[in-house]
Image (cartoon, rainbow, N blue to C red):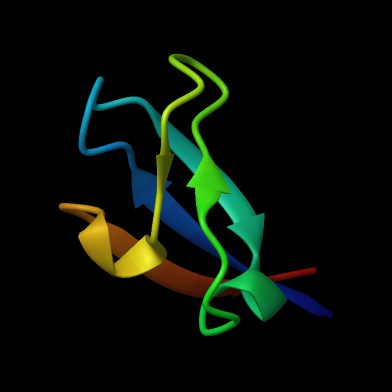
Length: 52
């Protein structure tokens, strides 16, 4: 199993998932909808889950 987390872009409210290794890496995520960059903790919604 791999782990992912879902985020919501604080700029356009687009929702997308990322590999969990990026969750605490200190790297900015890039929104695939508006291309804005933000840290995971800046997301208004975080959903961490496992998938198979």
